[in-house]
Length: 284
Image 1: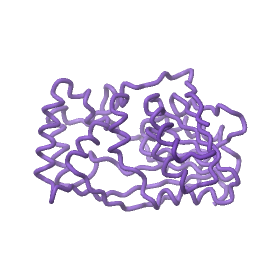
Image 2: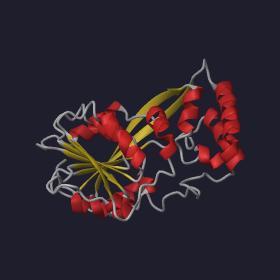
Image 3: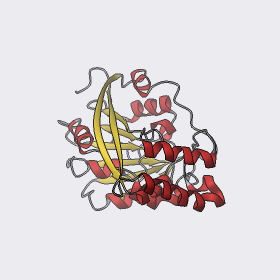
């Protein structure tokens, strides 16, 4: 059963950032490497009835990848500030959820509370979204709501095409900066600032202080048109930032990408990193 969205009292849905681009987000954002999915599933060995809490779920990439591998999953909590994203996540989960129940919570991650008592998460995931969150508060929330044993907090990510170093991404970044200024744009109004400390330090200072780091190299190939779709889903090149210049930007970006493509293909060599954090003395 998929339940209606539970709206947090302290945070209304924020559809201003990616609401209009939800379809592009679902289509163009890269998924999780198979190795990372199987690593997550392996953390639940011996857990009789796993419960997943996915923070900043977006269009539900993590639970959709995990559900067919972790067949014993009995419940999923989806959390996002964007109600449109949550609706899409519920939709894409429907074909794979089986008897697994799903709740959706619209609001900031640190304000999450389970809709039904007794469904304490045994796996808490956060993919490509931890930097948007109040991280110490999120980890305190995780400690409050998580099951006492066999709980893993997984913080995952692989950067973006802004941070990737290749000739074509360097040229693309310069084109974006030519339109929007040198600083990387982020959110609905501001610019991006690097976190004050590492995610490893955030986790080490929390209740989940036993941290292991896992790396999964991945090579992706992009068609120029797919990169354009991906850019619409980013906080640094989403359409609203360009206003009436967006059509001209996309036309220029497409020409640039076509010029750099080798046989119509652009290559990205990335590393997908998974930080697994447990309470001291927890199951390994």
